Image 1 (cartoon, rainbow, N blue to C red):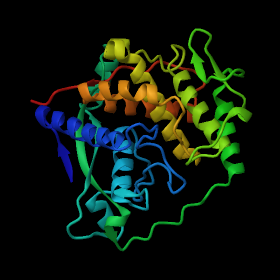
Image 2: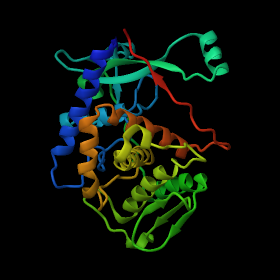
Image 3: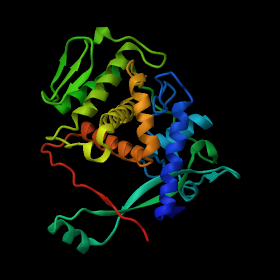
Image 4: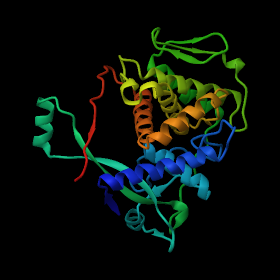
Length: 313
């Protein structure tokens, strides 16, 4: 089922998804654990078994929250028809989870004219209901291949090295210095484990957070949120970095445990996403873009064009 949302319906969709994630955050008051922190039982990014593709953006957060609340054991999600196409059947009475995607409007001629006239591409938001593999009969998910810590370290180091980022190890703070275009990290030996991460995994989770910040430099993705969020842009950038780290950790098999400095950001995050229901969508989409960039940095960088989301009348 695919739903085409008009203006008021889309606003309700933004609000509904935002409220579900805010509820998940507020379920652990005083703790640094977010609904996107994954434990050792996590099978990675949510994926569609009929297409082999991972979900991205706000859909990752939505499906993680639903999987956690409903205690689903797999990360496989597909529409009712897609499950039927591979010989599976959604069980009677099961409720789907809403995912969203954006469809470009216009044909090839309109795209060419937009490019010539330097116009922004136009998209319309659509939504679809998906069901987890635990909600269907006749499908046996493949056994996930557990990665050893050695494999995790190797894959993480390969990604980090491929970025070419300037990373210095010194002191007791982890941060990205935009003017220097440099990441500062404590030595690996300074990291301690958490309930969900050992010291090595904690190190990589923090470094991936800082690398997500690194992608925002004007020579890369040229991310400047000051116009969109004003004085709250700092909190939004932190939220983007958290999402980016979570997506990368899931993809690499690194457990994404809570950072020790989360507490100071949570109030600001909640303030932003409660007052602007589109903030989560923007942050998650931007984080997916950053994670994709880090996984396969281009040889030459061109700042992405802005996207215009039109209103349906």
